[in-house]
Length: 301
Image (cartoon, rainbow, N blue to C red; front, top):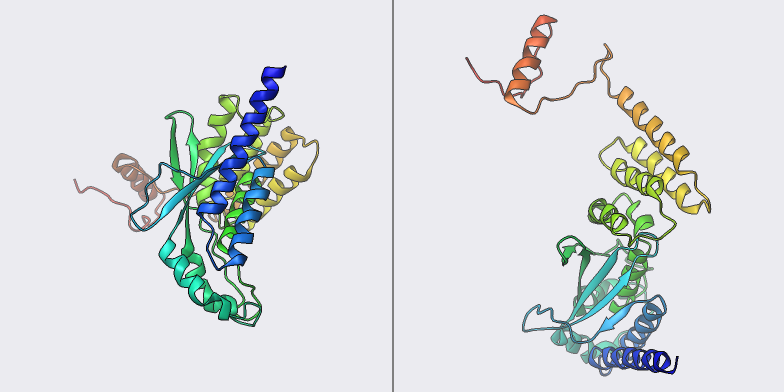
């Protein structure tokens, strides 16, 4: 027990040292707002289980230095990493006259955003268990800001919002604009479940329901996508979701959408994918005295 306590103590000390090094190396002299934001990032992210590495092996380019943040999503178990590169030259330019800026004045965020957003560059990755490598994906968190009322956002605050969003990755993926994250979940979620690295409470029915929602919320009609996302959100808020009933509800909505896609005669129109299928499709249309659908490639005899 004494040995275990010593190991835990050393682990905590190493963690504290790394966190302090992050704040020291990536602070900006003369910009106390940024430095407070960095301390807040390290404190809050660490409390959520994130690990900081101030000496990343990632080499962006000769203009910046990089640190890493690793953490796991609480609902899916997927392991994520952020590579954060700081550009000292941009930081120096911000520090040169930031004390002359009234950061609370209307429009201040619009004036400073072009430089603030360039202090850090963030790249996301998820750990591929099959190939044992990091797979990159987009983590752009830019938003349309109110040019008058929006407040100045410090770069470290942006990073914290990304961590919060990815720790709740499944809920975040239900946002219609989160295309990249849905692609990550499509590949990673079954992999982590099969490897036993998803939360214990996620059984196969739960995996199926979550995967169906993620896959069918894209590529359907706008109405159907919204309804399926609503099913997904309800599943997340239910303390004891009935996954079988949820799957049945999704299936019903899916079939209803297919019925809406049928033409007047009730035949669902699908464009053939091969030349042979195209020829058979044209023959079928000719036999029913219908005009062939335009733009289908047909080889001349």
